[in-house]
Length: 178
Length: 149
Image (cartoon, rainbow over all chains, first blue to last red; front, side):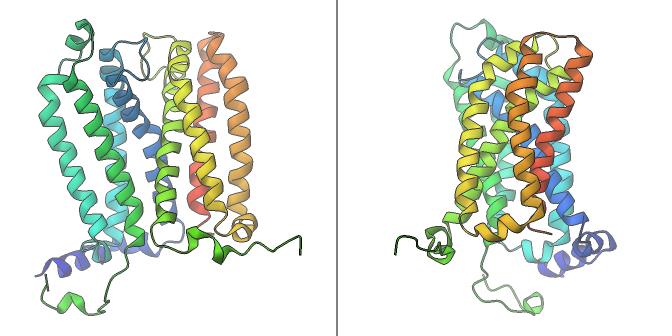
């Protein structure tokens, strides 16, 4: 089975066919995806701005990071859930869309970002409170996070604008030509 | 002729492949900034996050970012609107969005702001925060829905 066939089989399941063919469910999921971005993505933005010393400077870094963390996790789970339901319902169009692929790659890099800066920034932010100034590594973590999330958001929007150079209705049966 | 009819096909945004989605991306990023910073204060008002801090502290240190976000997102929204003004104007979901946006913005700088700064009782605070979240989320929903109605 090729990747194309697998993606087609996934999108053909009852759940994803239902979403795709529902006039109401699809826009509700898309709206929820964007509303979650605004409400919970805002928490990531605020944390990044705090690490850069640009917002909430009257509140310690550890408070901003640790006390919004449970809600960031809730937001992330919601975001992924809406995302899977949306992408799954159009997977056979999406899987070879370069913007979709870039978005997934950047999401993997978010995981790498968390691992790379875990020890120095995120695991023990109280340590940062005691320093006279925020270290460069905290600012690097914030800038990387901002760049990654902005990229993910932009690629998500751009998925809708991919013009397939040559469209083959039966490309699922053809061997991959890359 | 003094008055020329506005012709959307001549709008630069309708004549290349990248500018429309670029404006959409800036629009989305900055509404996330505006709504996200307001939502942080609302979470506090609802007693859901940063309970060791006063709501007023959070408002004071995020309000500049909210304002910058609102200004850029409304500006880019107006630019996007020029690509097809008639279609947007006739769309019921777009009309709802415009009305909700005016209400939410006025609410944010009057009732919401006053309640946060006056450290009023927590129940009133929670109601004001909840209404704020509902208002802003309804704007996002109506924005998506005008592509589907």
